Length: 365
Length: 270
Image 1 (cartoon, rainbow over the protein chains, first blue to last red):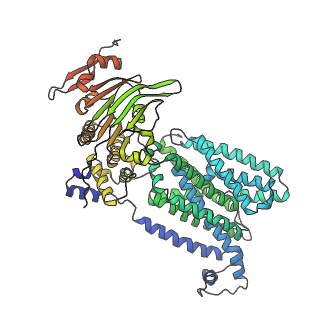
Image 2: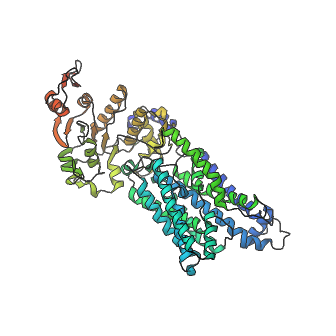
Image 3: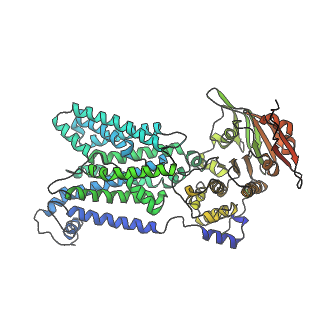
């Protein structure tokens, strides 16, 4: 019962029998993901209509920092293309991926359900609807900040709404979650349709480009807005790790262990809305990243949030940058919408998870 | 190996005065008075729907009574912060689910969340709690893969690892076999003997008679009787409370009361 009740030899044996609090491979995996992040970024920046080798990309990157590394490129425009087109695009892919991966992990933690995800639940759609409203009806004076702010407000409202609607007894059952997602996505879809109808031709085109989800045309201004939001939100999220672990015992038990559940909920919802909005405002709706990444991390490294949250951020960034490479190279002279790609892969994956949870739960509940 | 000193903290008294609780128009608790002092193990019993779990929730500070007060060491429970409260009392709920596949050791370690982090002390407390509840061999298993009784014991180990002076246990023995029922109640008894306070909801009145200092009987939201088990658990009182004939016979070996339904008696005493 207490440590004092066991003879010290027995206690030592018992302590030795405990599995480690943090899986040994967690550090290795996080380091690996960090390395992969840099490698994919360098490769991704080189791929496109103007093909540059990683050494050439590395050269331009190092030159910015005042070093003379890598191989100078033969292309006269290499530096200009990288600096003004490729780098912001790669950076935004990484930021959006990190934000969506973390938002998914946070949401699953606070809903106590592994199927929760901003895209599935309709938070992305809610954010998109609000931003569409801004594009269609608002004055464009606020520039990219305006879309980001509206996306944030829309995402925040939708997250609170979904949270309030889909929970009972401190938990969210799968069937409630999915049905709520259908309803919210339907309403947000209708709002987007209405704004598309009301918008003028230029705004309409912008809205359509958005719904597909694309990184095409990323500017540094977007990165400058997304970077602080995502960085701060990911950092704040990682301070919640232990509380989110406790929340998996259920809200009452978490409270018994000293977690201020109401406050935690509000903080998580605001963070999820901020990260989703940062992604949606500049890339459109990119679904399923927040579903696939945390799930794979849990399989490999266990459910503890202290590892899950940073690994989901890194994994999301790597996944979205990789998807962006595919989007740019799969079809010659075409830049496929990245949101379409992630849904193409993520949709079946979601279905597989649904099947699995049905088998485990013995029904749709 | 650093050894934690035996907990010397004596439980502050937990007291409910005139507590009523209702949901909508339905009164679940009516004017309940109960005091739990250090060194006491109180069994809470009564028919289904009598308000046992609600009373436990009120004592735990989860539910705010509609009337009356719950105080812990003289302070209103609601005035104590969640973290501070977690250091004072541990709660075991009837149903214990874990949303993600945490290992058994992880789950028990969560019991240490409100305490200052100290890896050596945490490991020792977790290992000791697992060993005491006969779950050390499950330490590396995933919680959702356990049987009902194993989950109950691991969750009990989590409340032990919390090192709180007050334990509130909702049916800690419901899913357990005979050996583990005795094990868990024996541990609860030992906690009380060390100066902790324990309140346990129990359906098995013989178990209450064997291990508890006092028995509190709830019926329809009221505290029907509270006192030493031998005084409270009479055949007449229990038969009336449960609306079923109940026999109280002395255990042939220990002399402790054994309480069981009288079968074959189809007529209700009413």
